[in-house]
Amino acid sequence: MPNVSVTRPPETRSPAEIVQDVLRDVSDIVRAEIRLARTEMTEQAQKAGQAAGFFAGAAVCGLLAAACLTACIIALIALVTPVWVAALLTCIFLVCIAAAVYHGAQLKLKGFQPVPQRTIETMKETLQWAKERTT
Image (cartoon, helix red, strand yellow):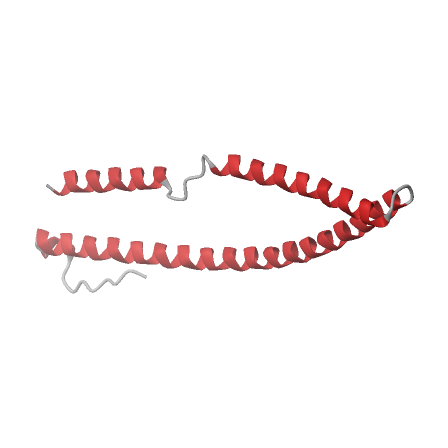
């Protein structure tokens, strides 16, 4: 809540006192908005953490399923070739898939910029606007 400590009626206050009160009120509002943003971000982070736990569980199950599928493929190929050849062929196939996925990930990362450029530009514009307003 804004800290209002006015003891005199508004008509008798000096302009400096009014500006000081306005600045204090704006400061209080900004602090309140920051507290609200922190609270919302904490709640969202907790939800994201819970979802990440479920994704991890799904990833483990998927990995186990992929291992079972690999064993099935090796057993199927082993019906017509020795087991070591079946395992080697399956391994080569999986390495090719891994290489293709890795290459695709590298291509996706070429355009990745970890610094939020638009936000930085907006902040610079806001600061410039504020400087122009105060001078």
